[in-house]
Image 1: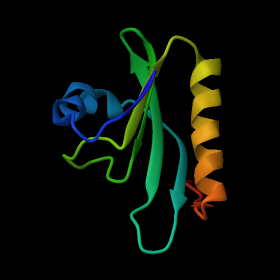
Image 2: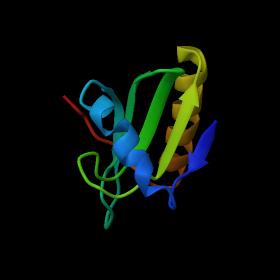
Image 3: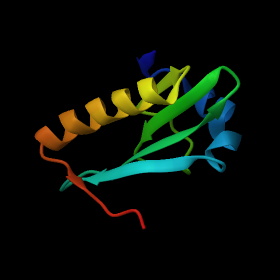
Image 4: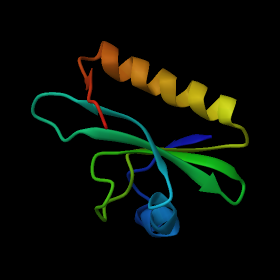
Length: 95
């Protein structure tokens, strides 16, 4: 389940300690905006991803999703990435 997360400031605190153990799936950039980072990590109920423009900040995540399996999570994150790429965002090498 993905949620637009503009009104849930407590969520960052809930997942903040897990981000340090997370994995960066991808990072996108576009002119005039902060980069978007897609991170995934284990969650007590399965797997979770966040889409954020400031992974170490204190503002709510832009989007987050919880999935019971890696296939669902990857499919959802790739769909989000595809939409953003079609809107003019570009891949950034995270290595």
